[in-house]
Image (cartoon, rainbow over all chains, first blue to last red):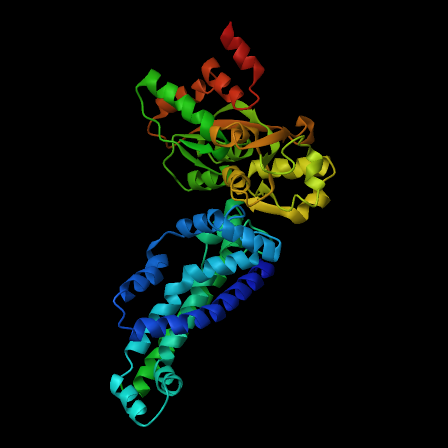
Length: 227
Length: 235
């Protein structure tokens, strides 16, 4: 089998997943913190919203990005005035759609890790005079390290594996919105099964390796901490 | 029944009449011809395949996945379509494709959609390929291509005349046909799948696509119909 890979699509997918992963970590940290420690009576509502992309088909998200954020809606018009183009068929559009789509994969592992931090440690740090920010930085974050890694890697991998949303709003523009999953789909469609296979195999090996590393690292860390 | 997406509106009308006449129930599955081809090639349980071209049915016949009898029931046409709120809607011409105001142009993916290939051929023939290429967004099939323009996300689109004449699009935009000699004819062919469990009915349907009532429905949706069959049936 000759390796017939679309490097442009691979580079684009890596760029998309990296941007989404970084932005998601920035969004997920405060969100997960609030979900883990807040006692607000409406907290469950936010939890439900965060989990929505897990159960909604990508077509729902794709549909709303296309129509509600489309170039006829107020939000779409604002975006168009700002950037000169619409959400759909643009890299930024894919980033926004992917952030929504991968949100639970970043937030949930981090929130779970935050919630698992022993509250007595936080109380002790507080008694010793550390500020909330310091407690977060020096107690919560180090103890939630595996949750952070899991959240980051899962959101990266989930974005790499995104298909339905990209198919609906991407417009298949080479170098802008033609990701690896779309490239595989196109190759199957044009009956280039060998080409589809080489790209699909790469994705399979990459995803397996990534997940194996995450689960492996988490296992050893748990070992060190005696849990 | 697996059918190309450009047949959505006319085929619904045709099957309604066929069901009434034959006391049968027809399930319609629409998609891109390439996608449907791959599904059928891998054993999808369809009885009839109506493709948007002749190439996919021929391949199925060559593999004996479809029966030899092929019926060319119509030819598709392509148009440039814009929404009524587009600055080009009035006095629409193909020259609009060159305008910098027309930023995004949707076509079906030429890698696997017959209408996409026709669109690329036509753009090349009328000398606009270079100007339009950087503006292209690709729909997965011709229906998605139409939806890109209808939703306002693309400023114009090269779609099937059949879709431009469909109820949901007719009232929302204007279109202009590409000269029919600017692209290879989109002759559409139907075949019966060899594994069909309802072969008798499947054959009857394939023939029904050539019946005058079916052909006049196809004509109403902008398809060019094979003149000879219509005339011979009329006698």
